[in-house]
Amino acid sequence: MIREIITYPDKRLKMRSIEVSEFNNELHFLLNDMLDTMIDKNGIGLASIQIGIPKRVFIINVPVETNKKNSDGDIETEYLIENLIEFINPVILETHGKTTYEEGCLSVPKFYETIERFNIIKVQYFNRFGEKIIKEFDGLKAIAFQHEFDHLEGKLFIEKLSYLKRKKFDREIRNRKVEQS
Ligand code: QAP
Ligand code: CO
Image (cartoon, rainbow, N blue to C red):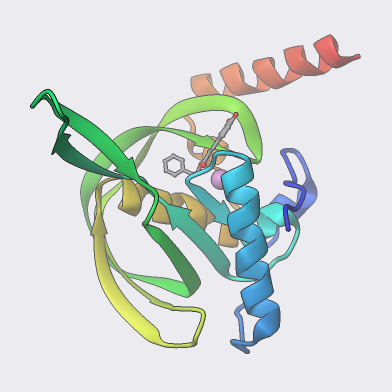
């Protein structure tokens, strides 16, 4: 079921989400609804609080690039959508290096800005069956994890902007409000 996404400046986005204690059907329905909603909105990551439910749950679905030869023998990049990962009660164990990426967020529609994140992270989380997993992520998966993890702490990527870039964001929001009224 596709749910409604709550957007900035909704105060619920500032809540700290609560640990999941039961890996039951209710959790599985939540995860299924999150996937339906993320696909519908063309997202690559979604945290539970973004549909108004303050649980320590998020999903990421970073497209995997594979290079394939087509019938002409040319190399073509194919994007597979087979890369959904469900994170429950995630913890960051280790971080390495720094990287930047132009981020967006379904809760801050049509605003993108370059954000600094850790390059490599080692994390612990549970899957939907309550099995504990420890893994290392790099690249876009590591960036997406950190962005979604921040949602669980009530933080949005716009809070990481420099003073000047934050001014630019505030101005854009103000202009959008004027256009709407
Ligand atoms: C978080 O973000 C993320 O403004 C997921 O109009 C961001 O899926 C992870 C989206 C950057 C890694 C790198 C945003 C779609 C989707 C918009 C998203 C919009 C339509 C954002
Ligand atoms: Co987001």
